[in-house]
Image (cartoon, rainbow, N blue to C red; front, side, top):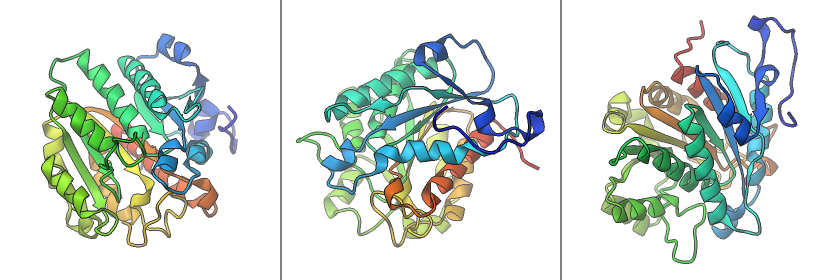
Length: 319
């Protein structure tokens, strides 16, 4: 319970907060848990390595800690939703990023097999390669033709070359290549792209792989109709939020702050629409750097988005 603490108004069900009800368990304990209702499990990814390799500013390894602190005080609106936290974070040991990504994939697949709504919290955005492979591994136990849609809120395509190794900007190029090798459809939509934060080659690569993308400046033109196709044609949805998609005044504590980033109220409608999907949903957030944050502003923002997504996904209406 090291990172889960906060205000206590009492123990009546209508005044409980997340830190009072969350259960911190090992993976073995989570796999043995017999609750079959609505349940969420947070998985922590303790890594700066991908950002270091990508020559970014370090600090995201502590992001998940601050997220838990920010989530702790949120009130419980639906006592049928059970909250769990994987006790041990996924650590990158001795710079072995790829091993940590595969360990994360194994954890995600196992938790999904027990019907947890998995919420992965980074760490760098290299978390996405592990999360995706966990979804894929689980999906393969259900079908020979897994249909996975990736919806990313990000200022970057994250489709850089990885010949010299993976980093926090290579994941979706890796996934695209993996899909091509294994005859799986690569279905990737990214919202919030910054025109001057991606090279001409990255725009061309995205077009080559059929990526659907929307510039940050175009977000006000988007509606549910833009998102509906990827939700309808896939059975599994990988929703990933890189915090640098948001405007620097809302999210100063990120690896790559954006002066012309999107505003949270521009994204919340789309996020809610995605979260409502009846398809198998997995959520992840990445690249909060507390050392650059002000009053935990970035962690508070992302914690709100996570909790909103959880409640929306489980159909909890707050009146």
